Image (tube, rainbow, N blue to C red; front, top):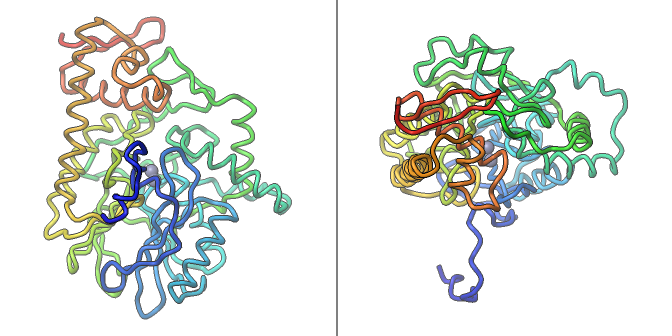
Length: 399
Ligand SMILES: [Zn+2]
Ligand SMILES: [Zn+2]
């Protein structure tokens, strides 16, 4: 609060999720510490790696991007906290974005740690990585790190070359939280440079960058192959007590939160962030990603006695239900905007509607993918009509 006075009026303070990674290690609750690792992604400055300490050593949650810089920072943070890499007995990955799972495979490889993720966690194919026939040079690693970081945002979008969920298709059976993703829907996944399912626009990553990014990832990633895949409501022993896994699809289909009923903690990953609204991808994310997201926001808001939310980016925050409401309101507003835009311009494509509701600087596949998620939700709710014209989806309000 006191720092605010020193910020010149003209400069808007960055959002807390954009702050650069601090070297500080802070204790948040008995046996729970926050460490921050640097990341290089638009709009984000750090990822929180939480440490859950018990008498065997510690578990870490979301150990950052792949690559030497993040690895070095991670070892330094552990040292500051009084631990060695070999003390890490468990790695938990909240979801399949590279700033969360990047370091996980390598920790497992070097320490034999258990790797825990949701049952639907998407994995890198082990066969792919075994094709690697030489160790990368340091220079190659550094170059790869930058490319992988730049490409990381695009990982919302699945292709045959990046992680897929096919190996675990029947993991979803009986999961009460959301619809099963249909094979047809998964088949609509967009490769980089390929057509989007809604038509009329292409993913903008150029061919060369795409090849480089894939090569970069193969060089850097030790595939994060989970040794334990948890289902919703499964108990996990961490920090000397029992936590409950909470499956929270919406941001990604495999998103996992962890709830500690004893001290009222919720490790919220990217499901609930303190000041930015998590992206809800309309691609590779179930038939109604927005519905899954809203339902599971309500689910975490209703958890008993949560005193502190521990997000993957930004500061721990105390009012989880309040933040859930704000995020839900944001989506309500966005749907209102889409409805009004649709009324104003008549039948329109995803791209046209996204241009009506997003400022120009945000135009692109991320904005379209979220607009698509909103529109598909409204189609399923019967509020919006959709048909196809020459392979492009067209939407109109009402029916
Ligand atoms: Zn994410
Ligand atoms: Zn994230």
